[in-house]
Amino acid sequence: MIARPTSLLVRTNLTLAVSSLAIVAIAVAALQSFVVEPIAEQSADDQAALLVLTAQTWDELPPESRPYFELELAEQHDLIISAEARAYPPARYDESPFLTQLEERLNTRLGQPVVITQGNELVWATLPMGGYQLQIGFSSTRQDIQPLYVGLVIAGLGAGVVLVTSAIIVLRVTRPLVQAAERADAFRGGANFDPLPEEGPKELVVLARNLNTMAREISALLSNRTTLLAGISHDLKTPLARMRLAVELLPKTVDAVLVARLERNLESMDELITDALKFARGTHEPTRPTELRKLVADLLRRQDPPVPFDCDKSAKTAVEVAPGALTRVLANLINNAQQHGQDAQVRLRGRQVHVIDSGPGIPAAHREAVFQPFFRLDGSRSAATGGSGLGLAIAHQLCEAHGWSVTISDNPSGGTDVCVSV
Image 1 (spheres, helix red, strand yellow):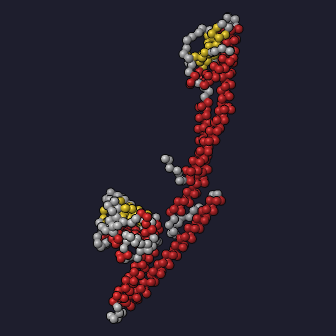
Image 2 (tube, rainbow, N blue to C red):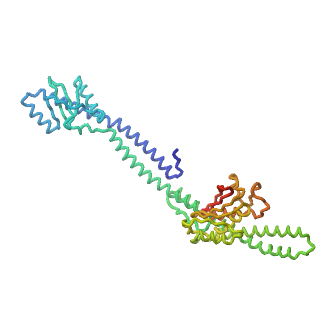
Image 3 (cartoon, helix red, strand yellow):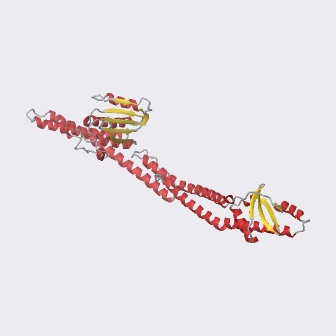
């Protein structure tokens, strides 16, 4: 089956192409019926009349004048007349509709069958006249009235003109739309949005203006949100430290279970605040050329317990990325694999980093939901493992902010394969 095109440019061009071809087909059919065929029939009738008149004139002339008449026919009308019957092969009617029409007109005018043959590069019509079987030859080029070729030329040239014209019109309309779609797809909420030119038809100007306004407002909103998040997270560090100090200064008579519970709650709060700060810093980090293989290797070197690293040595891994944000993404994924899976390992294939484990895996129905904040899988993720529930959510949002993709699939040997494409 042929896939349906998704591009507006392709769809519009196809629509115009089909409609233009339909118009050309109708025009060719009309031209064929009302112009080409009548002209061809009239040409055959005129040729038949000329041949019959030639034969009648030759028959009525005295024998001594006939050679002069034959010479004049050859010079003035390219007709060869002969009273001597010559054996030529029958004409090929399948190659020339003109000969069929000519034979019909001759039969009608003479009231008896006329034989048409071909030979010596001429077409010969044998006409019974005055007791003679006169053979009149004329050039085969006279039969070159080809309605099919005329139709094809008109269809080809007409369709070409219509398609080129429609393509120019479509490009003028769709190019700004394609540009708007590309800018919208590349927009990640940052302040580096390249505004669309507000020019062209009125509707496109309104679209570009609204898109530019929306991008500026979203950038300001995200910037304010990130600033607020970073500020709150940073300010919470001070009272959190005071609370920890207060717990440390509690008298020994305080219930140890209560103290342990307070410490766990403070640790959870600290982890939440730390994750929020990491996310706030990572969304606005500038990019720079980075050796992907070295970045992953340095990250794994700090992991405890060690994580195996399988790297494609031949792959080109120099990329333009925000190294801090990418490090946080991979660190969160590796930590998630170590906490909830088994035998975590990392594979580098070109611009794709795979974090693999052999744990219970993530059901396909929940592979989108696990990127939501605080979402947990009760059946396969134990709450006893701890964590803030933000690791995958932060990794996903950082990937979106920098134009990367993160996907989850099954590990062929069991478990989960989380792939980050940069």
